[in-house]
Length: 361
Image 1 (spheres, helix red, strand yellow):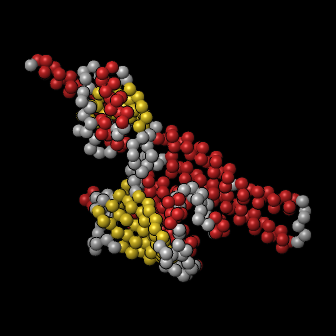
Image 2 (cartoon, helix red, strand yellow; image 1 turned 30 degrees about the vertical axis):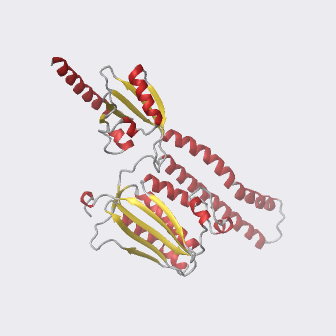
Image 3 (cartoon, rainbow, N blue to C red; image 1 turned 120 degrees about the vertical axis):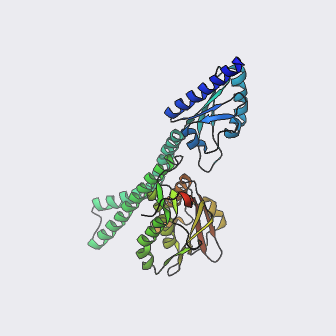
């Protein structure tokens, strides 16, 4: 009996000690019994793995064939085990996992988030490759015009002015490209970090519509906001960053204006099928996008019509930025294009339950 009491006391002390240590760590810490059932986790583990982890087996949470083998070897051979784990999710995550059996039979699992380091390496590689390719054309153009001007081969003021206007357009194009590259790099690096601020979603959407209204009118287009939620529905709040959500809908509406047929309507449609989700779509009418292009639209620098995109000032990065921001906010982006020319980009975003939403000011 005393032995059982001693075991219970040791177990309680181990759980308490693990809880105290876990609070000090930015890495995820899980404590499991000898069978692998998770008894307690720290707040970092909840942030990385989600809720309802306690009570599951380690191999259910770390879903990898190698995990079972490592867990068994750690228990049998008293050897610390270490491996890389990449969970299946829309956002690519990468953890270094360390498993150690404690003297009293408990199993300690440490999850070190390597996503930021991996993202930084990837962004650095992609940045160099993309910039060298995309800046070559405007730089070559600028160099040619500058050389012509310096050689005094221009005979009249009108030609000089035309050259300078082209040079100004190419310089602005490079500036837009650099701005979008920096924006995309920032979003990609932080994509694995779940946003924590509260955003009044509909206020952001209405603000974007208002900011682009004049541009739409110049093309004789009108942006209509259609809210199909049930009457009396509460304001929509979500966890996120207002500037990034603004960028999502600014890019989608700007594309609708650029690529839509002049004098055609643009519709922003709001609906929700569940209490914890909102669906916002942006539709316009123009040329149909062929089915083969749809899966690649969010690739960086992918353009359906390269000449037209460059002519109207596109950098080929807008939809890539949208995709990564939506991923960061744990949402889903999809696109459909019909034969009659109606193209719809749909964003599904998680929202805060009505009972937990902040009160309107």
